[in-house]
Each structure stands twice: as structure tokens, then as C-alpha cells.
Image 1 (tube, rainbow, N blue to C red):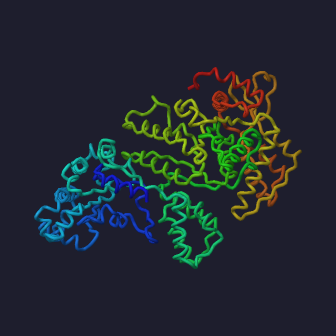
Image 2 (image 1 turned 30 degrees about the vertical axis):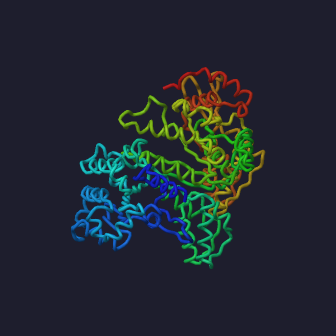
Amino acid sequence: MKWLKELKEKFESGVAHQFLLYLNIQDVFLKENKLERLDEILFSSELLNKAGIVVFYNRGTGFRFAEKEMKVRFLKILGCDADELTTNSAKPVSALKLLDDFLHFSWKDHQVIEAFSEDIAKKMEKENRPFIGVVLEYLETLVPGDAASGDCADRDILVILSQWAHDAKIRKNRNAVVLIADSLASIAPSLRRPDSETAIFKIPFPDLEERKEAIALLRKNFSRLEGDVEDGTLSNLTSGLNRSAISEIVRDSHYHKRPLIYSEVFSRKKKILEEQSGGLIEIRRPLWGMDAIGDLGPHKRFIRKVVDAMKRNDFLVVPMGILLIGPPGTGKTVFAEALAHEADIPLIIYKNLREMWHGQSERNQDLVFELTRAQAPVITFQDEIDQAFLARGTYFHGDSGVSSRMSADLYEFMSDTALRGKVVWLAATNRPDLLDPAMLRPGRFDVKIPFLPPDNPEASADIIFALLKKMEILARAALASFKWELSKEEAAEVASEMRCFWEQSSGRLYKEKPKGIAEEVQEIFYTGAEIEVILRKAYVIARDEGQEVLSGRHIQAAVHNYIPTKDIVIYNEMSIMALAETDSEEFLSENQKREALKARKIKKFPN
């Protein structure tokens, strides 16, 4: 474990005596063909196994000691009994003041000599061993993010820990302090500043090789385990999981005598990671690829180019991020799903990361980013990103700078070139004008793709066939039946009616073109989402008639029954914004190229 070696080096060199461990702290770690918890690993490490006393403390269970004899000596030095220790441990400030006294002891102090014997104390001093090692668990409950302005107890504990890091006597005595937190964002900022003298170590999620080692050990321990997932495939499939979660999957399969199969492992992984994130992410293996995309030929060619580059590890061709811009219902989400399906990698959908509690929003984002990094290669997707990350100058100033810090962290993570081709950022918006220019620059969103409603019946017909295939895939996944019959001629006929007419002077929508005012009427074709609603209505009509096969007649009836309700003015402006922001003509028709030139003259989205 690289982090454990570096921790020892910093202690031995005198660079630091107080350490902060965070992130994958609940995992088990492989040591000498055994999986051990973090407290076991720390006690057996070269840092703490040389200490005379190793004491663990958290505010829930109080003090505990690595060995029984250590508690006896601790009480002897303290000059009290176990009941007094329990009383002190129930009050975090009292407990830390008690530990503060012990951290200033050395092997030369007479209390220590009496507890260990003079021979042992002299031997320990000669070997330059620490007298005490202190491990504080669940640090976020002792010094939360607002500890500096919180209640008196939080402030007292923050002062104590800050002093420990700078205390020359603790360093001289070679005593050590290890702090353990779930994330940096969940603890007081002063403890994680560069000048805090607290050495910070991120405990990472296991990489591919570490997962292989853990799986090999589990296979050995559970030799009867069967399945069609080979170890190499299982190692790849469990990306993002820690060893504890992998062990849980294997043990459960062994106990229930169920084979390890691909779908079962992914289902368990999905459940574990979504629960671990607290519902902040959703993990999908999309069922459909480019067959579910109607029309949008240039967009499908782009998917092929990106997927081919990822499969041959030509990462310079893969964009850092792709921004999908356009009105609702134009295919942005299905594009993200198709890209993940064709690349055969998971799609992570980001949920709302913000919470009302101090520091929790930043903690949420940190955790999501680490889970994303651990699952690479992966595609991420955030819909309506303009709602989560507004442009600078538009933040609510009462959020204590949370929004600006979250945006800055996002920009930094998106710009990490080490993740190019491993984490592909996808985001969708219909209001790109609300996004910060720093987010839109190349190196974050390298490609900006417009998604517009169809502009002719042929495109609508293509969307109809794509959506019917998508519905067929959904039914098959649900072990249901979905049958349809639709000729190209029938599709062309119903597609020609999947439009409405907008009278600009009055703002009214008509299903049929009104007579006498042709110069003021604009033909508007239905979006893919609207067409999907019509197809579902058609299926209901077919089932109501007792028919098992969806036909053109049912679709025709659904078209006639459908009443468009969208705000044409807003949809048009969103289309104009998409044309204005796109940075590549490959996605535009000749007519759209001309419209894009006009759109770039628009300076502001209308209120």
C-alpha cells in the first residue's frame, strides 16, 4: 500500500507526526493473504506497532485499545479506574484533553517507567519508538465543516487538534496522531490547509491490479464458487468497488450457492455504489445504442468515431467533454445512452448534489468525483447542468461561497488530462447562456453538439422506427411482448401529420394550417419526445381494441388525438441558442449553417 509507506516515511523523517486519512476508510486491505480492516492495518503498520500504547477513540464508543495490556498501562499512568475512563470518553473535549496529556509523555517520564518497567522503557527509548499512537475515528463528528463557528465543544476540539499538529514536544517524543474522516469537505477547513502541518493521505479505491489480487484470494478461500465471469472480467466489472464490497458479492454468491454471472455482478455493483453515494448517482448499462436514435446522422457518425478511438486507446481523439444543447425532447439523453452502450462501459448519471447542511454539498461532490474516477473507463451525464452550475455573478451570495467552490472543483476535475478517454463528460442544457464561460471553454467541453427538432417528415419517420425499436428492447428486457407492423409508406404518411402550425401574430398553435395567413404561419415538427408520447398512446389504443400488434392505423388515431402544448417561442429561442453555441459545422445542414450565422449575432437570451 503506497499511502502506508509514504505515511511512515513522513513520520520517520520528522516531516509530520499528525496524519489525516480520508475516502476509502471503510475498506478491507490485503496483507499477507488476509483482508484486514483499517484499524488492524494501522496497528500492524511500522508506524504504530512500535508504540507502547495504541489507543483508538470515537465519540460513539469511546476509547478502545489495540491490546488489553495497553489499557491496563493507560489506566495505571492515568491513576484511575475503568469507570472514570468511561466517564471521560463520553465527553469528546474531556477525552481529547486526556489524550493531550498522554501525547506529551515520553519514555523518560516516571509514570511511563512505572507502568512499563525501567528495562522496557529504556529499551523503547533506545529504539526511538513512540510512547503513544492516537487514532481518532469519524473525525467529521468531532470537527465538522463549521466547527470554527460552531458550539464551544467543536471549537475546543478544533483548537486541540490544530495545536497537536504544531506541537514540537509531541514531535520530539515521536508520538503519532492519525485522524480518519470520510471526506476532506466534511471537516473543518483549517485542518486541511497546507500550513496546518497535518499530512493528508487519500485512501484510494483499489485499482485493477489490487482488485485482481483480492479476487484471487477470495477465489482461493471460496473454492466452490462457480460462474461464467472469469477473474479478469470480474476485476474489470467491479471497478469503483472497494475490496469489502467485492468480498460481500463473492461471499453472498457462495452462501446462496449462486454462480457469479455478469448481469448479477453488475446489478449488485449498481446497488452498492448507488447506496454508497447516498443516491447521488445512478449507474446504467443502457440497453440501446445507435439503433434507438432516429435521424441525426452526423451525431451517430460522431459516436462511432469516439467509440472507435476509445477501443483502440487513441485518447487524443476522445473529447474531454461533450455538451449537448437544444430544446427538451430532442434526443440528448438517448445520445448519452447510445454512446455508453456502443462503448460498452457504464453510464453514471449525476443527481442533485446540493444539500442544506454546511459542507455536505461539497462532500457529496467530492465523493461523486472519487467514485467516478474509480470506475474509469466511464461516461458521466448530467442533465440540465445549467440548473446545477450557474455562471459566476449569478450565485446566491448567502451560500457562503459553496457554489463557487463547487464550480471551481468541477472545472479542475473536468480539466484533468490524465482522465482523457477514461472519463468522458456529457452534459445537457437548453440554456447554455446560463453557464459560466469557464465551463464552455475547450479542454472541458471540447465539443458542443446541437440537438434540434426534426425539420421534415423524412426525419420524423426515421425517429418513429427508432422509437419502435427502443420500445421493443424495453419490452424484451421486461420479459414482455411488443409487436408492431409499419411500412415505410405508412410511416411517411403519419410522419407528415406529426407537426403543428404556429401563427406568429397571435401565438396560437393549430393542428391544421390555417387559411388566409400563410405568410405568418410557421410549420413546427414534433420533437422525438412528443413522437414517443404519440406511439405510447397508439399502443394503448391497440390494447384497448384487444390488438396485440401496433399498426399504422393506431398511430394515425393517436396523432389525431394528440394536442401539442409546448411554448413555441421558447423552443425556437432554445434552438437558436443551440445553433449559436455549436462549434462544429459537421452537425448542421446547409440551412442550419445559415441560421447559425444569424444566431451568433444574438447577445442575450430573452427574458
